[in-house]
Length: 344
Image 1 (cartoon, rainbow, N blue to C red):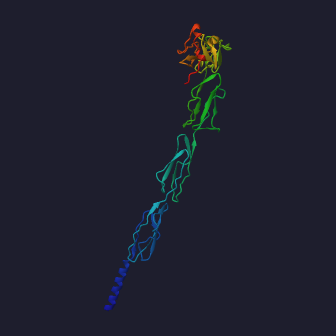
Image 2 (cartoon, rainbow, N blue to C red; image 1 turned 90 degrees about the horizontal axis):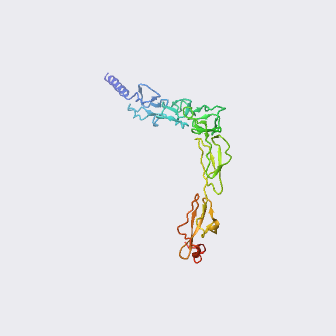
Image 3 (cartoon, rainbow, N blue to C red; image 1 turned 90 degrees about the vertical axis):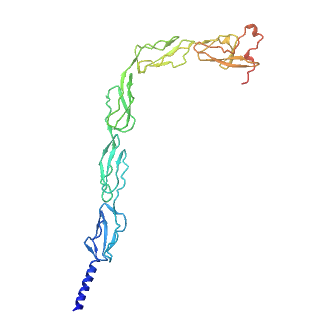
């Protein structure tokens, strides 16, 4: 009888001991599930952690076995969000990104002067792709400039194409005799309007004034408009050393009024001068034209050197180094022009 009671107690104790060795419910891992989820696991039974959709394991330790001790080993399994690839670039626009993880939202915008066509945002999905494809940023289109087909202001496109897009520039012209006031170009702006257009205005200039010692060629007209021209001439021996043509400007004035320049008399007679590369007696030369240059010969010790002087509208100065002798002294003094040139 005692032996039977002892056996029953031993079986009970063994059963309790074995019951204490089962593994309890395994620890939960955020963003993950277990393939077999129950209250207790017998030794040798294994479980596998799997990440929820949109997440991936950070480590490869996903399988765990219930040991005979009934205590699960330390679970190091961890899930992290999937990442979507960077979707850019967005031509003429910007992608606003906080991060690229699962469930993140990116937003799209276009640069100034461009209009967005397509989605304004996209969601990073569980499989690691974006819910929307990239939009397109189209340039703003301006209407044709408000220019009358039969007006005096016209324009032409600089770039090719039929439409006028953001930052495109057109160039204007006015029909003569109208003059342009304002910028000759206009640009398509970000709001779809044009920068200020120029104006064409009629311009008249007064009758050109006569010039002293000169004349105006064929100045028989009574009215002169923008871009009309007249040409001047000088009576001999006067000459003109500037533009002989004058143009009616948009300001209503003439571009220039030329002057006729006087020749210069040679103020000495006995000098030998160098003119156009040749030695010549001043009394034979008598005068030179405005802006022409002659060279006087000046004496040093036993040599001579040349000094230039230029005719400026009737005024010619004799160099200080030149000495003119009377006819008597000239018989005894050698002309500097016939002396040996001085070396530097």
